[in-house]
Amino acid sequence: MSREFEGVGASPGRVLGRVRRLEWEIPPVPHRTIGPEDVDSELERFEKARKQAIARVIELQAETTDLLGRFEGKVFESQAFMIDDPDLIAGTIAYIRDNFLAAERAFELQVLEYRVRMLDSPHAMVLDRLPDLHDVRLGVLSCLLDRPEPSLEGPEAGPAMILVAQDIAPSLAVRMRPEHVLGVVTASGSRGSHSVLIARSLGIPAVVGVGADLSRIADGAKILVDGHTGRLIIDPTEAEEDGYRRAVVQTVARRKILARLAAEPTETVDGVHTVVQANIEQPFDVEQAIRLGAEGVGLFRSEFLVIGRREIPSEEEQYEAYTAVVEAFPGREVTLRTFDIGGDKFPLFLSMPAEENPYLGWRAIRVCLDLPDLFRNQLRAAVRASAHGDLRLLIPFVTSADELARTRERLAEVYESLDMVESGHRIPVGVMVETPAALETVDLLAPYADFVSLGTNDLTQYVLAADRGHAKVSGIYDPLHPALVRMYRRLAVDCSRHQLDLSVCGELSADPVGVAILLGLGYRKFSVSLSALAEIRELIRHLSVKELEQLCAENTRCESGPEIRSIFEAYFERSGALTVSGTQTAASSD
Ligand code: PEP
Ligand code: MG
Image 1 (cartoon, rainbow, N blue to C red):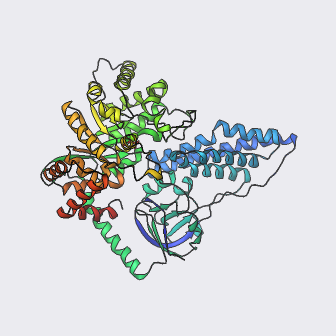
Image 2 (tube, rainbow, N blue to C red):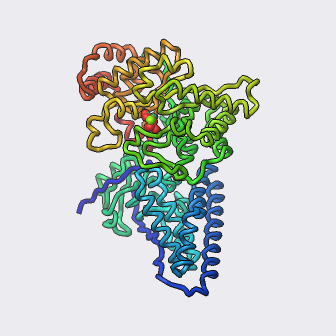
């Protein structure tokens, strides 16, 4: 049997310890029917269990807020929404009333139907909420069946262990204490789940999505877990354990260097100043972004507020979330992207007709302009939050000046409704260049835009006609394709001509070669995903803009992405920059 397994590195850090298998299963629900005379009392039992489950969720939310912070506490709100879900309630009531099922059986069947609908969704953010549903199911059924919930504390907790489970529900995750839980490994689960967010906040390394192989890891086995790479080694050899210990020493040293470097500017060896900002998905990413030295936020994806939600989030909730991020970065830009829903991300409150080509359909600014209530709430919250710092608005998926003009009209209405017309305070509005149309018409967009952010993820799929999520065309999807590199060059020239502040927020800014090419083409501002931020900052410190400009100028006739990549990699090796970025990749986010 292989001693090595691979999952998805979800919460960084390496640990060595013994396995504690955790059965976090739903109790068996007997098929019990009732007589017509019991319907009312059964409905009452269901309502009572729902109320108890909600009370438990509120309690967990308060505990989590005390322990980890306000936004971590909010993780439990989606569970409260699920327990209050009108379809779930009506379906359970119908099973009790029409099919004479006992409340627990009726609820169980409804949850299973709900789960199937979630599993059918192609959207990662909906699938991320499956552990929340598990929690809701367990919470309500525990009340109905009068069973205690499994606990992590208590006499059986013993010494610190590595938890191995099918999945970890958020209610369990918040009970993990680093002194008892060294790490977490799950068979299913995803990087974006609430449990993973909690593990990260607690600093507990986690690997998820290991699959069925996980059942082969015995209780009590010794295991090495790397929450960065997702690698697991069972019964490690002496040499592997030594390697682990050396890595831990290196990581501690690396952390100290990172902490020192975080405060320093990101300048190239020839003295060119650059700005490296963070891409964040949730307000509680802010802490890590600051620790890694982010100079503001270049992309705050606001979809976390709407995906998997049954209602449009209130203005107040949004205002709080945006203000928290803005206040965490005093004197720095925070770039809030308006809802980029559609494509691969749909909130439950939008009943979307199935689309043949969702990436070419009703998406982002098109949806926002069509749904005035949704857009107004977000714009009002953003404008109000901008009073607390340097908040900028970024508009995704723009294809025409008219979309920006209409956005500005909506904003003017917001200033009026907030009595701000006289004050003259205006929030900067930027355009995301992620469609060929936007890239071709920077001159037409410029009158409506204060800044530009290059979105290489979507631009690549639209220019190369290759779906960004389609495994079969992943070889064609190459952000370094000559067509794209030429476009990046033109965009830099056009933005400079129209005096538009330019940054890059697509994944190319997390790719060392991508950053080197963009630097050579004149880009000075990068917004980078957290996992690569420290690496990119350090890489830039070892590059020379002068040499990169020359390299770009000499290689305008490369015929393919791999060709240009190999030229820059060879340069990294000559200049020593690759060694620098390579060594830190493994440890940077540990
Ligand atoms: C992009 O398209 O490059 C981008 C940053 O946006 P997203 O990945 O969220 O579509
Ligand atoms: Mg995009």
